[in-house]
Amino acid sequence: MMAESPAARAAAVREAAVRHAPRHNRLLRSAEDGKRLSDMMLPFFLLRPPTGFGVLTTLGRRTGKARRKCVRMVQRGDEVFLVQLLPPAVAIVRPDAVAAWLWNIRAEPRVLVRLPSGTFTGVAREITDPAELRRAREVLCETVDPFDYAECAAHLRGLPSRKKVKELRRYWFDTGNPLVIELTGRRGPALRASGPS
Image 1 (cartoon, rainbow, N blue to C red):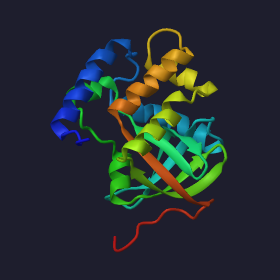
Image 2: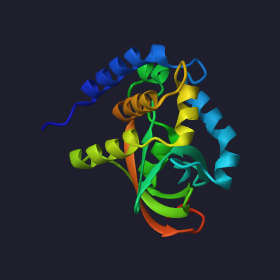
Image 3: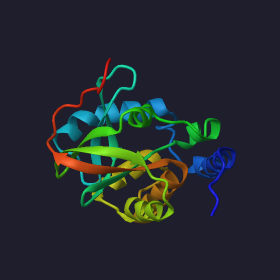
Image 4: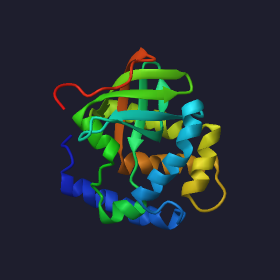
C-alpha cells in the first residue's frame, strides 16, 4: 500500500472538514478557541483529569520551557494514545496545520503526562504504521467516557449521544495527527531541555 502524498492528504482533510463543518458549534472555530478552552480546564485537570483526558507537558522548541495542554488521552497499559485535532474551520483553510505542542514533540519527544492514574514520563511519537494506526483508531474512537459527552456538546450542535461522540472521534482521528506516548516512568522530574540552550 502506497503512502498518501501530502497534497492528497490535504485535499482529503479539507473535504472531510467541509462535510463536517455544519455540524460544529460556533464556540470552537479556531485553534485559538481551543487554546482558550484548554487554559480554562487546566487548573481542574491538574488536580485530577477526568477519565479519557490528561495534561500533556512538552518542552517549548524555542524557549525550552515546559508547556501544558489539556488533551484527550486514552491509556492502554504502558501506552497513551492521543490525536492533534484540526477544527473544521482551521482544516478548511489549512488542512496541514500543526499545533504548537506537536511541533514541540517533533523537536523533543520526551513528555510528561498527568492522567487519572498518575503522572508519568514518556516518549511521544507520531503513528505511521498501518497496524498501529488501526489499533489507535479503535482505542480512541470506540472508547466513550462520561466527560466525552460534555466535550461533544462543546464541539457539535444538538444533544450529545454515544453515536455522536464516536462520529466526532472518527472525524478527529481521520483528519488529525495520531500519536502514542510510550510511558517510561512514574512521577518523573520536571522536563528540562537537553543540550545547549
